Length: 231
Image 1 (cartoon, rainbow, N blue to C red):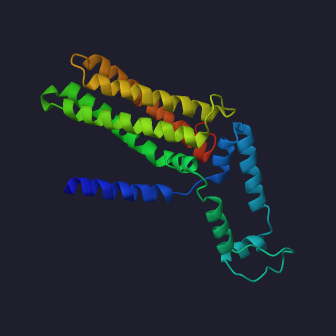
Image 2: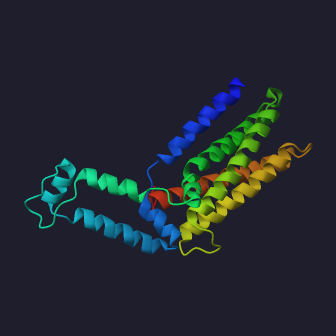
Image 3: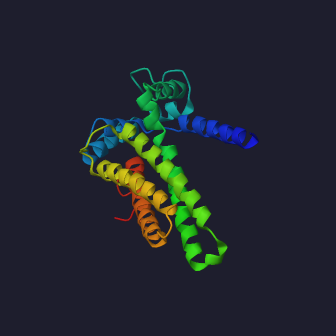
């Protein structure tokens, strides 16, 4: 019972943390509206231009958080507190589907960690069979499969329920993530099947590569094209 209480408390903490994560509203709306990568980049550039194109006095006024009007601006400036309140209102949950979509980023970290640790455990098992890590691999793969399935479902809520995307990055992320969930479930089945060690190792290696690719495309969606600066 004590263990169950600890797990429940940890889950509650993680749920609160997930709901308090900052949301990139422009990118989220762009994916929901099925915009192309170029259109989303253009939208973000216009947003940056609007912010950085303001007179320096107005930007200093926004940064200071003062409530009195700036002398150099014709319109009444928006204070930092008002901007914060507007952003909070903009990010407010609108539906159950919206909530599930927002859980995707935090849910995706669990299968990534568990399945990559399963790959490491399987390598150690191959090098040191006497360590008896078979049960550990089963636990990691099973947990990773459950987490991958949940993350994939949340991802469909986040990206919209459609089979084609104008954004190439979103399309790759969507279908690679769905494939990871399916292959992870297969790996969990193999982990409990006697005499399937070679097949399990091949599937786990495949998952490890797919997870790295998935993480890269996820970074592209959050931070923009060429977020690692490799091009």
